[in-house]
Length: 150
Image 1 (cartoon, rainbow, N blue to C red):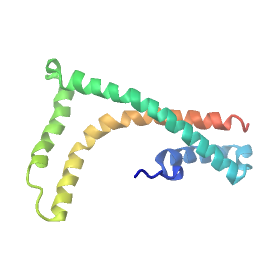
Image 2: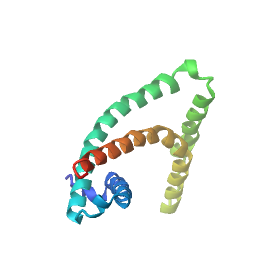
Image 3: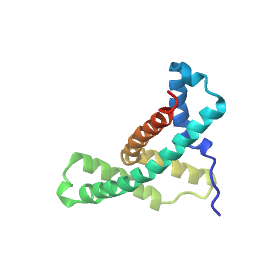
């Protein structure tokens, strides 16, 4: 069963609200808007940003697959220092994943935490580039929604 998440609890909504509050503090016209109008602007901008985010994700996935299969797994780039470091991160967690995780719940959680901590640099390299276009899209959507106010 799929439940619909409240749009006000998403990170995109919170980021757009943060940017909107920043713009409200600089504009007297925006400060005079009612709370219902402000909420409507935020929800419209968030919905528009969500649609754009899906497009960005559909472009991002093939690019990251090309990065992974084109550079990281290509034997011609095996001597590259970045590729050695990047593959070394993943190779360093293989013994932890395939090893003994322990019998108690706290041992399993500790092993999972160690794996996650070791993978943080790779996660940042692979996941952070998607946030920049999403934030740009959120700012553009908010600006488009506020265009009708000024």
